[in-house]
Amino acid sequence: MILSVNTPSHTYPIYIGASLIQLLQRYSTQHIDNNCTIVTNETIAPLYLKSVTDVLKSAGKNVYEIILPDGESYKNIETLQIIYDGLMQQRMERRSTLIALGGGVIGDMTGFAAATYQRGMPFVQIPTTLLSQVDSSVGGKTGINHPLGKNMIGAFYQPQAVFAGLDTLHTLPKREFSAGMAEVIKYALLGDIEFLQWIEQHIEPLMALDNDSLAYAVEKCCAMKADIVAADEKENGQRALLNLGHTFGHAIETQMGYGTWLHGEAVSAGMVVACHLSERMGFISSEDTLRVNNLLQKASLPNTPPEFPFERWIEHMKHDKKVSAGKIRFVVLESLGHAIIKECSDIELLKDCLSAWLPK
View 1 (cartoon, helix red, strand yellow):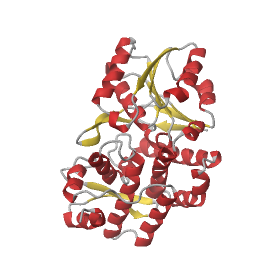
View 2 (cartoon, rainbow, N blue to C red; view 1 turned 90 degrees about the horizontal axis):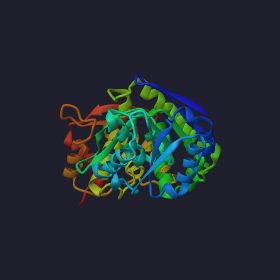
View 3 (cartoon, helix red, strand yellow; view 1 turned 30 degrees about the horizontal axis):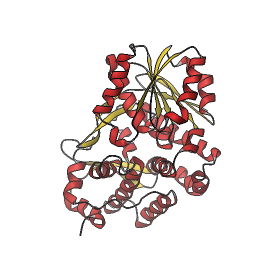
View 4 (cartoon, helix red, strand yellow; view 1 turned 45 degrees about the vertical axis):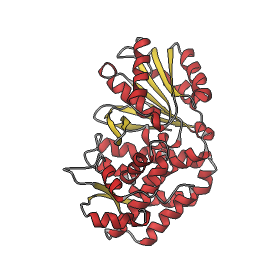
């Protein structure tokens, strides 16, 4: 399966297939310079680095490697510096290719390094987690975390290609796979009620890693994101809908410490809070919220956020990238399958929405 992402920057393909190595053998040479550097982490390197390197070397590429520590807690300026150091030591040039081999953290950091090294070099995404295959590898959002806010430092910078091999999902820990399911469910909630119904009907084969079900889910999410990114590359409007659950979710990640909650877990709990806010704004029903809760539970995802003071929620959410003119904007559900963006300056409404999860 080949999808296209058409942006003002450029058009690039998403290759989706059962075997990552077969995808690379067939398509990689047209997107990767003769000098390239693979950025991965200590967890992914033993699984895939040699096989990916062998494919590229067999095509005549000079391949260098940078192996980073694993985890969201390392998505920072200090780890980014390791990438820059490696690129300088290897004498990578502006036309050399940087390759992100890993999940969302590796993809975000590698993309940001590519956007800023020598003011921009090509990069390719090889996502190895469900979350990165269905969401973070597509669309060109790159960046690192700051102690005061998640993904607050970064750039919009599109890859040259994305290679999504479904076989990599079979080596994921169950917790990581479930975290990716949060993003799959997010797409259905924000824009496709029929896809939501499909997920509800296929949640068991999805969780059992049935390849046909996975292929459909990955293709569907990538196609939805490609359409949204094509219409709004730099998140001036429609693309912000992709942040359903993220305003609350990022507050959870920042409060608890990056990596304590996986990103998808925080988004899952954030979507539940977003459903409660949607209820209180008079949109969806309590039955709709319960339906979302039940689906998240079946995906082994948390549907309750951690308890911490309301003032901390507000402080973290004021650092959200959707804040405009000092007002917090939320992605809420006008109905299941249809999201909208609403400003909310009603502190009491927000406190009521979060009341079940505030310290007593």
